[in-house]
Image (cartoon, rainbow, N blue to C red; front, side, top):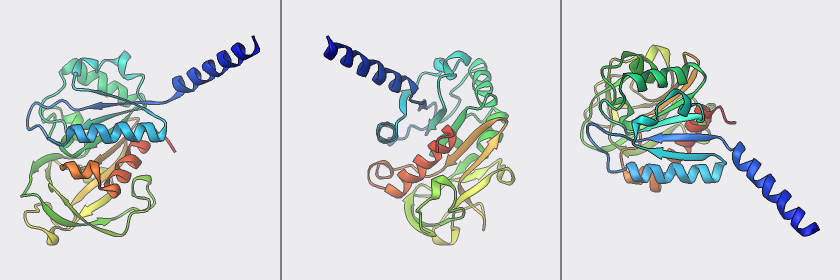
Amino acid sequence: MKKIILIAVAFIALSFTYKKQPKILVFSKTKGFHHASIPKGIDAITRMGKENNFIVDTTTDAALFTTDNLKQYKAVIFLSTTGDVLNEEQQAAFENYIHNGGGFVGVHAATDTEYGWPWYNRMIGAYFKSHPKQQKATLHVVDKKFIANKNLPDTIVHFDEWYNFKSTHFDSVNILITVDEKSYTGGENGALHPISWYKQFEGGRIFYTALGHTDDCYISDYQFLNHLLGGIKYAMNKK
């Protein structure tokens, strides 16, 4: 009898712990270019959740963007979304989510998304304009105190697809990493070319990184993965 009681108590404790785990939603719907690295990104973020005590739900279904459903998530990640992925009701639900303290993480093509939604542009900080061929470039780590940049060196040589931006709101963001346009060909944003940033926005926490085009980013680039994990933790308000 005592053994049964102990098992029941342990089960209840385990269930309580599971329920207390924060949840995030990874959204990867595409209406434009579809990045082949999305499945690797989902795998990497799912693994992060298992290793850092948060639950990861994944979807391409925009119907999940309702006020009631979004309440359960500490952060929503747009993983290389492209094009017009939410209708007006879904957009309103997401705005409400941010206004109520939700977190947002945009990865790579998240800036190639929702060009007809000015609020989204202000929230994420910029829209994608163009990119040259994939190549190596030198990154400068600007803020080493922020959680996403901890343990990163001052400079990093990284292979990726380097986005040029338009409709920028860089004066409203905290820049984390810049790319040196002198180190590669095809840059169009000038001497200050942010590639990752964060900010508080209308009640929510926003993190964006333009890195993450290739499979290798999610498989073996531990500097990028730690950077992304830090951004997720910031959006979740998780220490």
